[in-house]
Length: 494
Image 1 (cartoon, rainbow, N blue to C red):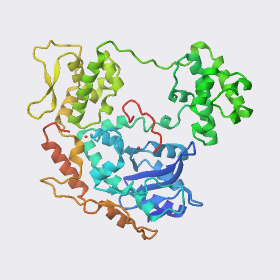
Image 2: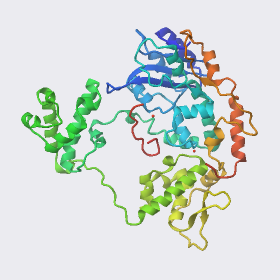
Image 3: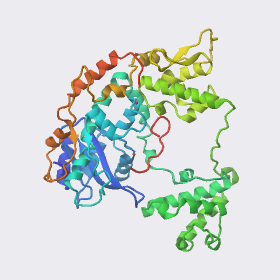
Image 4: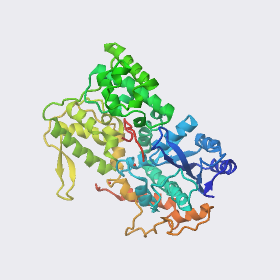
């Protein structure tokens, strides 16, 4: 089956998938004219079948699918899960459990920051994704066969991507790294933003506490209004209007009407009264309770070159161990480390300290130096002779250091790619494409679809074995998007 349009068929599918160890999941939605994303299609695949679920079909009840998402015995695999989870959180009232995000896993495995699905599908599953329906209107019905096949290509190759990534994570012990990176993504609070924090997203030229107090109340009012009316924030009232109102702080409808950025229709009636009430609430707040935005830290002179030096070291280390730099340290954290040895940053503890933090402090204190190797032309870290001992630099846990050093010097991403080598026969590229003329029957058999994206590829066991062999043999260092994506801090995607 390929497109499910009734509850009975959906329940049967989900009952079968409940016996799977894992399923791959994706969604298609629109949100250009609404605050909440409108779910238009769900794609799901198990080991032996894949299907699209039409949530807009008349009379369909999605509860069987939600039950599958709640089933803790079945791992749910997404790529760039943030917006999919936002939708499911709104519809289910809770997050699917447990989940795995291949975008975050790929970062841990050295594919760079925010790697796209198409890249992973091509490199790890040998799939070629048809792009012709990428920007289609998924709310229109009926869906074409081309749309259904394209939608399924988002979950079928994802199974192989998952298998290859998880094999490396487990072999290298980086599955523990992934757990840390997933913490923000799996926190329900990520998907229920506080309306009173929305003012922080606005670009203000002033940081006056009273101004910010008024702006906070205005932004909170707009957020609740947008949610209630299911409209984008900017369609309720634009940022420019809120900033102007916060600056002038009108306390009457008459003074509000002189706001240039405010549409005339909003300068009177219930909307105007609500705006005035928000302004008065901000003005009445005690001075000591007014919000303050963090000021940009002025670093001591000479810090910028140190930050640049640490950034080179970070890049070198991350390329050597095959991990995205932003997972280890951000620019702000590098600045903090450059200014303060005891800075409270992620790279000062755990595996990040073993990979980067300890050597960063040694480089900063002159115990190590960066040089270009005459052998391979790459940057390497070398000890400085006769450097005085520095007992203030904490050493990493010996086991963590040895575990890191035991890993391959070659980026894991390179060893995983589906490529032709001297020792490995070429693998024919499975294709996820539709012909120019589509005459495929509405019901596309799952086995045939499976063959279109995974046929002629090596078994998962052989792939994992070849990856492990490549990693064990390597001993030299070598070289690595649809809506609003919020910042995920403390080691998650940003």
